[in-house]
Length: 388
Image 1 (cartoon, rainbow, N blue to C red):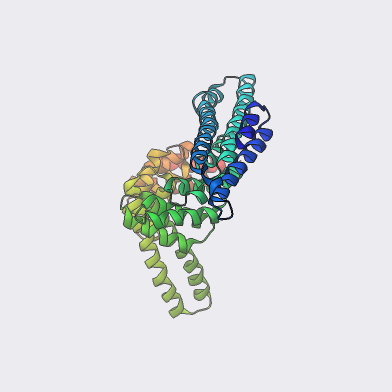
Image 2: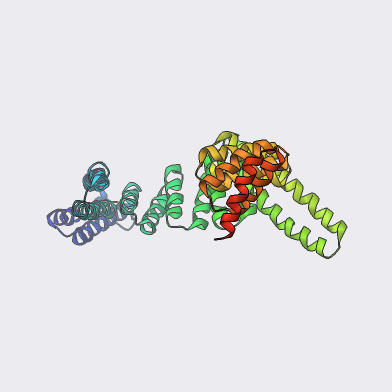
């Protein structure tokens, strides 16, 4: 009787009807297996159980494989033909046509994977197939549901646990993503990438202390993991800013001892921030955001040569940004390298000729370095701008 339902399913065009027939077929197959195991069935009626069990197993394997493989081919077509066509489309009409085809083929892929599930719900691969198809459609909330179904059937699969975690990230569900990355980390405790992903999840949940713990574990697992160093550097920088506020409040209240205590803690945090950010940019010297933060931290910390190096590198990476040139010039002034401060500040005036404050600093530098002609020109520019 189960095979009759399978044959009915083969003649149907509607996926929902096909699923109903295969579900009925599977129920009948399961009923036969249950009957063969039952002690209430007479022995002479069980004689053919082995023969029929083998036949049914073969039928299930056939229909499962047939539907699953069609789903895999449809998914392959999406990856190899349709998505590249969408990316390469030169006009909206072409893109709309390819997008419509993507939806149609994806619906077909999902349908065949669900047919395979109806035939044998115990195999995880069709669940994964449905999840992957939803991924291609950027339907991440749906994909993660199917990844979880697959993971429930194959709980030791690192690949499925990881895909489930990434599915939650795509859905901006950082809490569940962290939980699945933790499951993955429990199985591969020294994998630095997984530890870093957990830290990223905690950062997005603004649980910075927890993120710090996993970042330091990631560094222990892989000392070349630049992102973890930079993240820890930022962690200490943020904590130092809180102590800066406490120093200000204690100073205003004439609580000198308390202010000094806060200052010691802040300086230690800045030292830590400087170290970790410095390690990070050694590994990725073109990370602009980290360079900016390292420049600020080292400047506040009185590490002027390091700060100058950071902002000099920033002027090379982003020569169009005035602030980098101004910061570099200001640092040279701090360490009394007045002649070296002139060139970056001149570059700043090229980028923004209307900044009076920069012209005033330049005028003073020209005067201090006995360049009277340039000092006069700078003053004339200041007078001109002040009249506007």
